[in-house]
Image 1 (tube, rainbow, N blue to C red):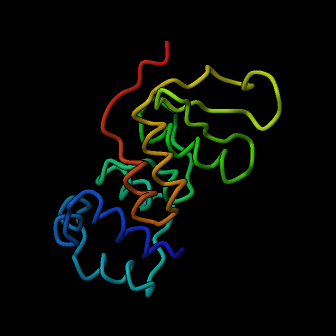
Image 2 (cartoon, one colour; image 1 turned 90 degrees about the horizontal axis):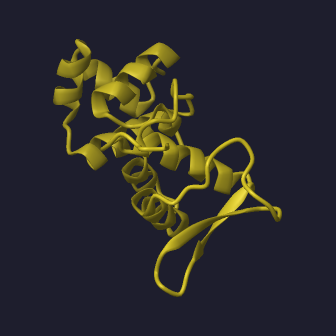
Amino acid sequence: MSIGTKIQAALKARGVSQKELAERLGVTHVQIGKYIRGQVTPKPDQLYKIADALDISPLFFGLLPEKITRDGDLAGYLMEGIRCGFCSLLAEPDGTLTLIPAEQGELKGGPMIFDQDVLHRVAVWNLDRTEENAARAMLNDRELDLM
């Protein structure tokens, strides 16, 4: 999908208008419209600012966050793992979701993920991989307690 489509999906997921985003960024709403229509491609530093202004993971725009400490960042990281075939989600009989590595054994490089809110958001996206569902999954709504 285009960056413009992603910006539009993020605006919709947050319930923010182009004008409000422009005010938050200190640019004109005309500039935001150009981004959305694909007339101008924002540079990575501007995409980080857009992600910050909408409180959405920069992973939504294909950019890495500084750290995975927020729920939207974790969702984006897991979604990329599913896209690449590194892991998948399993619905347990009791309704909980479990992240399953592609190969037997523990996930390498991090703790097992048990945050049901994040896993549910990723599962919704996994069932219907629209930009709107991706944006909703990657909204940063809270800090994670990964300890």
